[in-house]
View 1: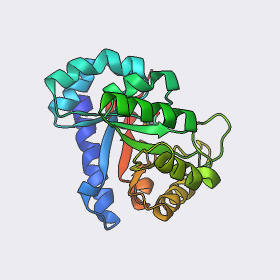
View 2 (view 1 turned 90 degrees about the vertical axis):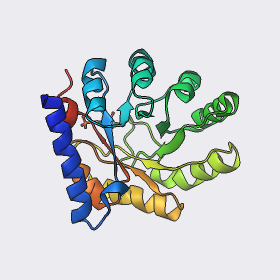
View 3 (view 1 turned 45 degrees about the vertical axis):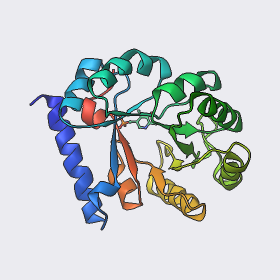
View 4 (view 1 turned 180 degrees about the vertical axis):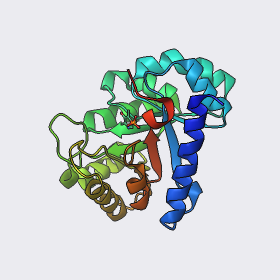
Length: 221
Ligand SMILES: *Cc1c(COP(=O)(O)O)cnc(C)c1O
């Protein structure tokens, strides 16, 4: 077994164990293998080992790698987890099965337009800037309820859940708890939270999607 596949198997087991430890069903947590900056050959190993859900951060990079991989593995699912420019909305709607970084009204409008055009709708997660960091994308926690209402009522978008990236220098759990609270009061089931360093805490607090890169693919150069 390659080192990558060994790490994948360990993470899968660990995600399932964390779910059980916290009284949840392992199937209730989807592992997103984050393959940004990693070559197609390494991604293919992970696909061959049975992993089907992947995350990428850049539209151009995903476009270069994924059409060929999807041709080989048609049931692979691709999630956009990085910041999305409005002028890339069309390509994103064509390429991705889910988008986790809906973080502003102008993007909601573009996505709604492109979804109608393409007749294909990626599942959508609204990114919340739980730490209210100026350099980070995401809707402020206090504005999220109103933003969700506008996504639904003005743009006709179905939102599956919320996503956050806690500030690096803080314990992540309060951010995960806040995201779960905002999702619950808005009747949303999806919670995209938890990365290589903190996925167990995220699972404890209700993550339905964990986004794990370096713990599977190795450190990024
Ligand atoms: C890169 C990235 C990840 C994966 O991070 P790791 O620490 O390598 O697991 C998860 N989520 C987002 C939004 C990312 O940009």
